[in-house]
Image (cartoon, rainbow, N blue to C red):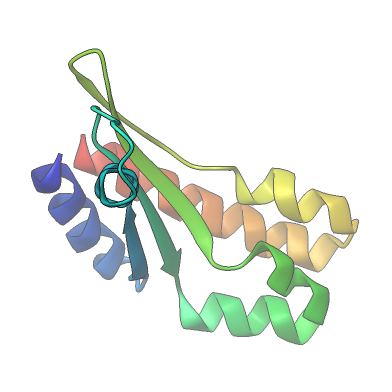
Length: 116
């Protein structure tokens, strides 16, 4: 799984996204004394230019920032996905934000597709 996350990080960098934070759910649960076998990582990713565009359009768009990508193991298969930015930002009913979200979503999915 770490190899996939590293490859994803490289692809994200090519699209000017950075991983702001990487939460290792398995390690955190084990630290708390809870057994959780599969690997599970939550990545918070951001492109600062796109974040600025969204926040400049409507400060409430910050509720949906940064974007999340989840990488986890499921019965021997590594899975990767994200909540679609278009679905989240669609709650704001703003055409400009929806265009930004469409572009971000397309680029993030492309990064994921290139990583698997």
